[in-house]
Each structure stands twice: as structure tokens, then as C-alpha cells.
Image 1 (cartoon, one colour):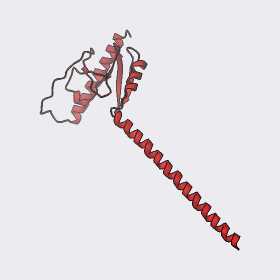
Image 2 (cartoon, rainbow, N blue to C red):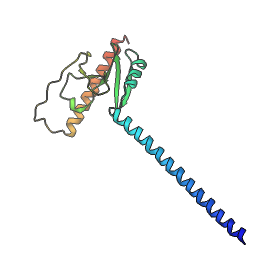
Image 3 (cartoon, one colour):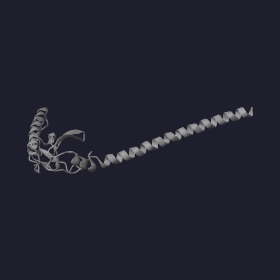
Image 4 (cartoon, rainbow, N blue to C red):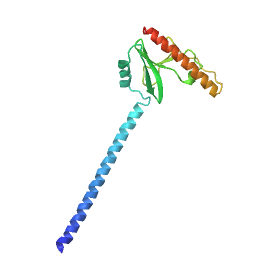
Length: 165
């Protein structure tokens, strides 16, 4: 009958409309994912140092004078301390092992352009390493880690003493 044939055509059209609607939803969802990815990419480029000015302000307001805490940035855990209203990171990079006077890095800027300081939190300008540095060996890395651990304990004691603890 004509009605039966018309019903099949209507069912086919409804199925096609449903498939088209589903495809439009998928495309809209994909466009939303791409939009979010673009926003995330922009954020990652703007905060490549993994620290924002907002985050730096939050650290200043959240870390008390004389307090030490663990700070995670650029896939590394660091010791962060507040001394005389400034924030400092304990320098643990083996690349500074030969720079015995470098103990702290002043955390004042998100770009990483910060000053190095000695154990007394005084700005220190490191001397340049000789062009022919000895090769890095397991023993030299172990020695560096032991030296850094000892420096960290001494620095922590200095902060505790300065804070009156």
C-alpha cells in the first residue's frame, strides 16, 4: 500500500535525520575539545616556568616568615623558605656543586631570572666554571648530593635560628 511505502520513507528520513543530528553533536564536541586544547596550549606557553604571578602572590601570602615548605615546579621538588619577606628556593642542582657559596635562589620572578644567594641570604654572583670541567661520574654525583644534603641541613638550621626556633 501507499501508506506502508510512505511509512518506510518516513522511518528512513527520521533515521537519517537522527544520524545527521548525532554527527552534528560529535562535530560540536570535537570543536569544543579543540577550543579547550587551544586555551590549554596558550596557558602552557604563557606559564612555561610552571609559575604564574598569581601563584607567586599566593606563595607570598601563604608562606609565613621563617617557614619552610616543599615546592613542586618544573618536575622537581624544592625546599622553599621565607626569610625577611622574600621567598627562596634551596639550590640542589648538581650543576652548582662547584659553587660552594650558592645556597639559595631568590624566587622573585616567574621567568626564572632570579638571583643566587649565599647561606646568609646575601646575593652572590657565581664565578664561571672553567671551560674544561671534569666529566660527571657516579661518584661526583654522590659527593654532590651528600654536600647538598649537608648544606640543606645547615641552611634549615640557619632559618630556624633566624626565626627564633
